[in-house]
Image (cartoon, rainbow, N blue to C red; front, side):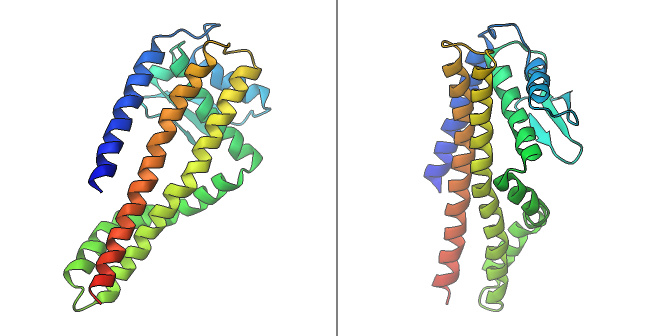
Length: 218
């Protein structure tokens, strides 16, 4: 568990460093993140998704409920490699949604269950550990809830990786990045993907920890 936390911290620091580095590299054609998102939507025949700016840093996301691509201020109006990479990645999610990409559909279906689990699981697990001698079933309920969040973490991996692959491939095919800047865009998105990988590993490690507690108290 401690090793996962340290690794997560390192990856977050590297990601921040990469974003800052590539934020200083101008995109070859001067396109901003918002420009790239709108152009990518247009060329993929998607006309029911809007692109808007939101507050915060690294808060970028695609919202399938209101069909919006939400780009942080540092991405929306910036004409940098980091900005267009992030914008293309989020637009990749919109394309996944339009094409009915399987893992994204599964992740979307899990959202209500995971939302409920996230609100209750820590209290159920805590009560389950404290009361294991009296109501051992409570801990197993907590484990089942946490298992849903772990499943969600692993389902998220192909969704994020595929969105990055779509982003880099489209940026290259559209001529928006060249031989020098394509590896930069790919590198930025690679480190972003690592955050999801380590989150999934950390979730699995925590799940196994609680399973071990349950098994040892039998």
